[in-house]
Image (cartoon, rainbow, N blue to C red):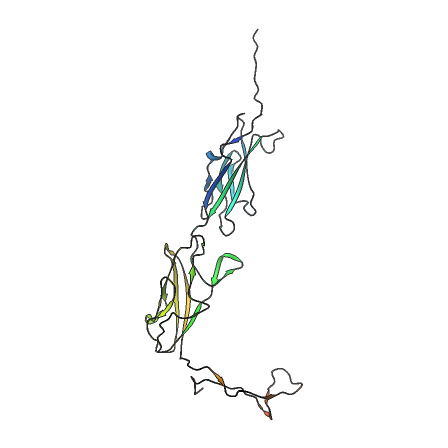
Length: 290
């Protein structure tokens, strides 16, 4: 008597990941479609020799759609959308491995692996001159105003010039990198009147100016690691006559008269002389003929 026994493989084992926790550092400027975690590192095994079906989700708000797997049977994780360090700098992904399709009515066994993605800021932006204001609340774009200052005609200043809204200063907006910035004047410096300190950005004079004029300097801030990462700011320097005296009023007290019922912008008249408008006069000894 020959008895043939067939042993049926019962689905009684869950898929198993070789590693259930992985961490990857991903540069911010990683190209879209780049593999982040290889298939070999994420493939699960099943003692029942079942086909494994994968699903990837994210647990961090606003990080959905950036990472994906190649296919339902291929767990390689790749970058699906360009990263922005200012939006988020980490993500936690959950990779599920099932021995049945998600839509299958049969009971499925599931394994889970956690993948932590750490975004590393890349040196992607040119220097920002400060102070600056973000455009439309977008922290990736910051617009600065021109600098301005004054020098006296025929007078040599040995100190750094005082500028508005502040001294010339630029930073690397990729703030976790903070590349060193150097400064130079690239335009508007007629006759080489001014110099800028390459390290501090302080603006000083090389020689006196003998005529009332103005200079519109172009100052460039460049990252030392890349001459292609630079910004240019405008610095307007006005040449004025020296002022030794403050202005003063011709009188210490002025008395005037107004009439009830007059419309706005009506004259105020001198007290005691209702036919003569009140005139307030200021004088300046620096300008005796004015």
